[in-house]
Image 1: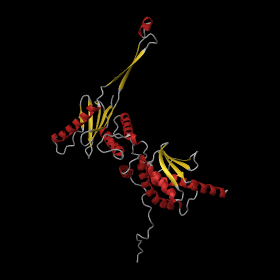
Image 2: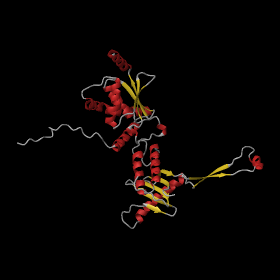
Image 3: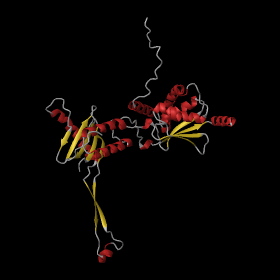
Image 4: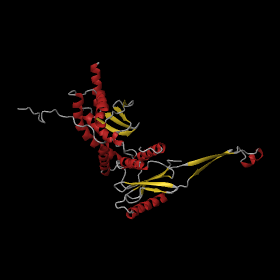
Length: 177
Length: 185
């Protein structure tokens, strides 16, 4: 499935995770079967089931692990800036593997926006990341109940991210959102 | 000698009536934080934000009336409320308020309903402060305008159909209004 956005992270200036979003993709199987009348009563003694629903999903990463991974990424990012052969490197922007693609945008203030997509995705990640940055400045920074560098718990931010991701999934490689 | 038009000969320009929403949002966010740091209860925060709104209402009332209605003063209650709903809201927030209703049980209470007040655009209230509505700012503006127009009242903001501004007029105001309507018949 192309355009499959798997994870979204926002990492603050100190390297701790302040927002994470995970796509919940489930494959649902419905198995139908029928019983021989003679064994029907033996099994339940009442109306027997004739179908079972099985759900398959990728193993989920626990919140603790996400926090650890984010701080690890933060340190690796800083090391990459130092190791880069070009001076004034911008740090990790794209990390591609056979299983996934990771895109990162670091703002001027040091806040990192990370999106992880499936390997075959052709999504316009930089515009997605800059739109995420815009939503952060709107619904987190203009919210008087949000303290800077703390985890983001704003309902309007969650809704806006959801809308943005739905648009991104539908856009199919379009350049801007 | 050539006739030069100096700056004093030109008529006064109305000026740009719009500012950036982000600028206002950041300033308003700071105002809410300022009120919150100096208050103990949610009612206190509401009162403080409303007092900031009162300052705005006092100053804007004269200028809006002068610009929109010339030198005529609104004396009827309903007319004044409609003026606030359409003209004042349009001037301040760029859109009109949604509905104006009269309460069924209390003849002194009117309800001004707005689905999405401009100041709440970027504000998500956490669950432990669920009663707090930053539209208390607009409630303060409405109260100041009605007070200046000699319709004494109390205005509060509530979460109802979006945001509802409950306008509670004094008995004297309603009595005066009814007397005026009777004499006109």
